[in-house]
Image (cartoon, rainbow, N blue to C red):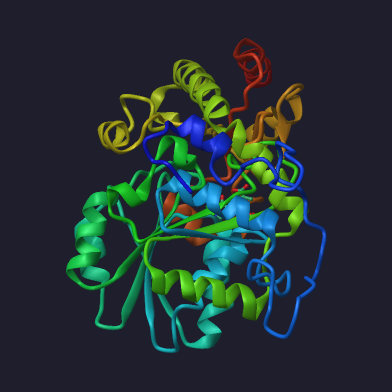
Amino acid sequence: MSDTKLGFATRAIHDGQKPDAATGAVNVPIYLTSTYQQDGIGETRGGHEYARLTNPTRDALEESLCSLEGGTSAHCFGSGMAAITAMVTMMKTGDHVVCTDNMYGGTGRLFDQVMTNYGLTFSYVDTRDAKAVAAAIRPETKLVHIETPTNPMMSVTDIRAVAEVCHARGVELSVDNTFLSPYLQRPIELGADIVMHSTTKFLNGHSDGLGGVLVATRPEQAERFRFVQKCTGGILSPFDSYLLLRGVKTLAVRMEQHEKNGRVVGSFLAERLGADKVFYPGLETHPQHELAKRQQRGFGSMMSFECGSLEAANTFAKRLKLCYLAESLGGVETLMCHPATMTHAAVGAKRRAELGITDGLMRVSVGIEDVGDIVGDLEQALG
Ligand code: P1T
């Protein structure tokens, strides 16, 4: 059970992660089993029937993540995309979803190229403007799904303001909290109904496992998400659950270091390239700096910057020695991504241009190496 009086770092280590009752092992065992012996018909041990429904390693992880986000239950899936898919299965043909216009490219691809085939409709709005969200809500709108800060333009949405708009109209609000982790932002405290993560990122922290989670705030959501886990089977494996349990234990210290390094790298890039070329809410020049300061516990370590052209971005990327050119984010190592050809290729050139995702834009996930080494690598690569 979660004791909410305990601090975040303590809960990250202990909630859901009690020593094994049978042996005292301080780490949750990896339960590699697909099924469970029953003592008689209908007589399960602790409710375990079949591993698509429950697995003690995954159960422990779900308890841990639920505690960290302050929800009522958590439900883990095999990837962030599987979690988003599960969330939209709450809807029926004819239902409508309002989303942030700038999101991870795979999320829009799922909505536009898969979910529309099942009669769902999606509107993309600039959710920085709560009035634009209100204007986009229709009688058939069931969900507002936002990313804040956004991938990769780092726009910040006022979660509390959008939650008020949603609740006045009887619509649920889900927040993709991947870029900050619950250490730096807790959307449920600001009114969100569902929190979603690609746990592949900061929650795992070591770039060694995909995963996704939905954190619920109401019993009917929990029932629905459990049912989707059971019916569609896109669950997280016991081994990946273990990797996440292990990653989460150090979330607080990792995020502190990501935050420190992020500030140094953000300032360096702003000084080197000009603040107008750097998209990082930690800069005072960022249009939502004050909002980010208010609703986030820190600015995180995600940012993007403009190199000017595809050629300049590629020259920069090829010169990197320490930082890796790679998709993904949130690991201990500094990762550099070219959104136009990587994470946001599916968005299409027209929409990328509208969102400011130019061919010269590079995104950085600042790792927790010695920050002088990261800055040194960026400096030499910028030439
Ligand atoms: O990759 P997966 O675990 O399925 O998560 C999808 C996803 C969802 N939401 C956000 C905000 C994301 O950034 C992602 C995945 N993003 C990358 C792979 C990336 O490099 O941006």
